[in-house]
Image (cartoon, rainbow, N blue to C red; front, side, top):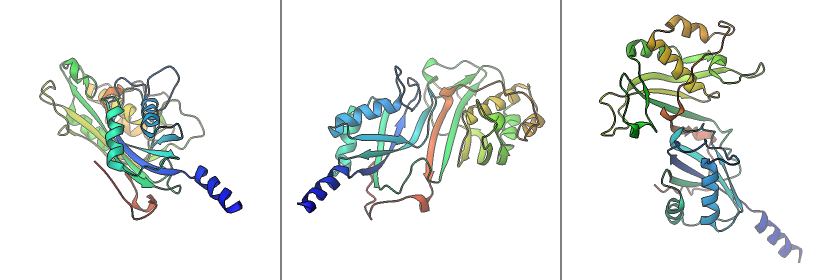
Length: 286
């Protein structure tokens, strides 16, 4: 009797763990995290999962938060559920069929309770797409920010390079406190031609700011982009950027946060030694 009862308890308590990678256009959403009375990506994803899995015995945890209107080319999330997913291909078909058109599931793999999508070591790559000089076609607005002023692109490229390496980024964080850790290592920081996304309603020349790091502060990328925009306009100098990355060197917050709609979380790489699978089953579907 005890053995039977114990098996029943274990069956009820058992959870399954999966990592699903998403793409989404964030233009009509108030960010990833679920909130009351507004449309969020997490809210739509969880609602769809309840329908596809046939129960409410599941929850999701994103690899981070995205702001309102920020998009993602690669956004991993962890799914915790009491229902085992046995056919990954069919799950992706059903999941995508019921998701709105601006959210797409790319792949699913099985993991276990040892993996933590927030704390496990990872590198994030953000891209910020922009043009300047002439107002864009309205259709470009969801992923391409237009700066109407003429910009010194070469000077901005020099400014972007200054952020590479280990620096103090308190000025590049909204609502900082006196107790946070504001030291971050930026692995890549550069402005290059946009060779990734194109459309016949884009201007002839578009650009992207590319940045990679193991961790970002709140609005850090948009504050960096706003600072580079001011540099390109001639409002600040390269010396100002150097000073802004040194503790207690400037006494005022940075005034411009670049618009969210040009920002895309492009890629998230988990470090191999921090990634756990339940078995040799590394099933993926694309």
